Length: 202
Ligand SMILES: Nc1ncnc2c1ncn2[C@@H]1O[C@H](COP(=O)(O)OP(=O)(O)OP(=O)(O)O)[C@@H](O)[C@H]1O
Ligand SMILES: Cc1cn([C@H]2C[C@H](O)[C@@H](COP(=O)(O)O)O2)c(=O)[nH]c1=O
Image 1 (cartoon, rainbow, N blue to C red):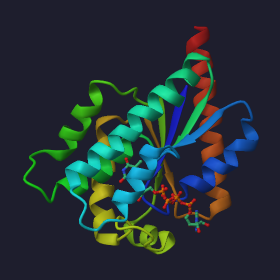
Image 2 (image 1 turned 60 degrees about the vertical axis):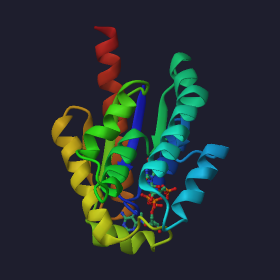
Image 3 (image 1 turned 90 degrees about the horizontal axis):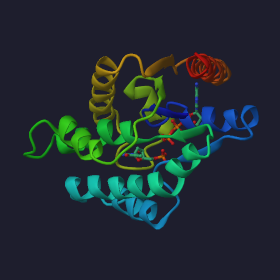
């Protein structure tokens, strides 16, 4: 089963992802951008204020393709639980926001269309919901995406994704204290695994 953690920068994904390690020692914990050379290229693009948005989308997408073939698909084929800190929804939400400043029409559909041909959608996605101002303040503007105005557009895209796939997303109020957010995430994962077991056994 593939569970992803999504949300704005600073929403607390990594805090929750780390907390889950103890509860699920046999699971595969992974993240995007990855630590491969494709991931390095992504970080290089993120540090360039003038990076071409379309070129940047394809760097992120190349990193995802490598992540899928090297980590995600083998782990799922081995029957593992996989928990990924960011995954394809990050591209849909972030790069669609970046591409909205170009001539490309319907960027959200465009980015989803690129993935449809080769990606593997998550079975469930935990969305840590936080307002853009809190997100930007927590994240500390360490990259060009961590600005409240841009994050507001990213959040609108996440909302569109949730509206289109309500059964896949679990929304958690990430403005609550960290220990409460972690507990809500842990309970959600427990419930998702129980439901999965019930479905598989039926
Ligand atoms: N619920 C919370 N309330 C207040 N601060 C929090 C909360 N969750 C996380 N933080 C703090 O916000 C900062 C970012 O947290 P974290 O790295 O977990 O977020 P993230 O979603 O993974 O961010 P990014 O996408 O930028 O990596 C950290 O300093 C963390 O301690
Ligand atoms: C996977 C992915 C990530 N991003 C952005 C979102 C964040 O600003 C950074 C990743 O930073 P982190 O602190 O290491 O989580 O990258 C993106 O724009 N598109 C993506 O697909």
